[in-house]
Image 1 (cartoon, one colour):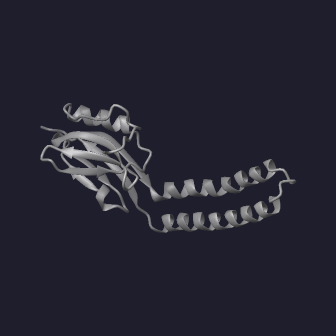
Image 2: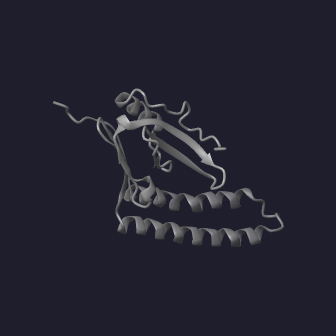
Image 3: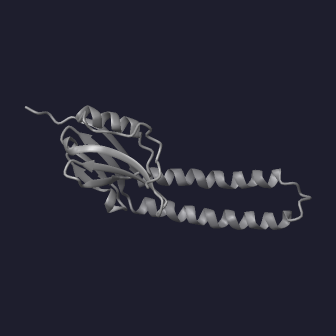
Length: 169
């Protein structure tokens, strides 16, 4: 009897992201206030700087509040799950980062930066030549994920440095 075992699981909800935005909303005015304190009042454009800081605070706070409210009113979650028979990822906004594959069919995980798009990519290459993309945008621990993948399939090649994304030529 083959018992399904979970080797790795990570999830991030929009509610958690809204909390981070709320914290940023609290810190932003404080950071900008420190900038004003550290800027000498004799600075020629000091009054103009104060005006810009006010606009930046109001605009940024409204944008952050709008995004936080949207996150709370549109609940969803990102997750990565690895069992002995399935490696899956679900991204609520990007379908290209949503997949479900058999971990025994994976041959390599590759990190790269696309020069043209200037974006980081995590490609999961399959033994049939196809590939799926894993989201690099969440703070899951890639070294733990790769260790878990190698526990399921010891033949998987993974990057030596989980934080390095070399340029693709």
